[in-house]
Amino acid sequence: MTNERIAPEFSLLDQDRKLRGLSEFRGRKVVLVFYPGAFTSVCTKELCTFRDSLVNFNKLNAFVIGISVDSPFVNKAFADQNNLQFPLLSDYNRTVSQKYAGVYENFAGMQNYSASKRAVLIINEEGKILYSWVSEDPGIEPDYESISEVLR
Picture 1 (cartoon, rainbow, N blue to C red):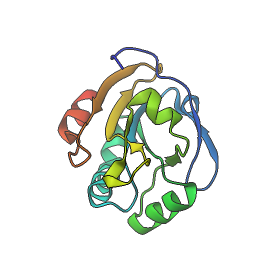
Picture 2: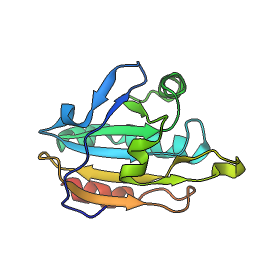
Picture 3: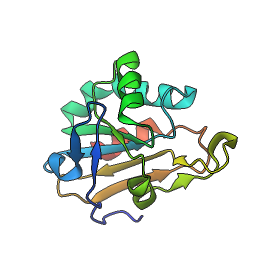
Picture 4: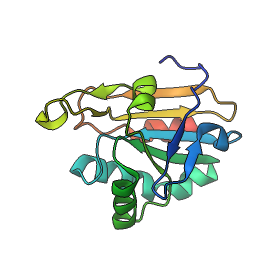
């Protein structure tokens, strides 16, 4: 997905089973964080890093949203255990992940199981994609400093 394109709208359930859409956050910058799976070591570290940066993101009028193929119930337990104070959306049918970043097929050696690719996209107040990073390697975290620079 190239930068400066309009981000596709979506509606997904959050960890409290509330339907959330991208348009709900129009007027703010949005940091979409696609992660392969709750409770995995790299995903936990990544999302806790975003959690620890929320004060800075708020100062920059940016809102963080996590998206994975996990169920709302798993996302709820993950958010509670890690004190994640931002929405974790459930893309259980993988359509949003496919539109934005793609999926890892046969993830973690599980035949016929796909998970969201690790990716970060920054969407501006008008809904345009300003930044897109997608990792082919689920073990690589994003460059957090680059994300902060784009938001400034």
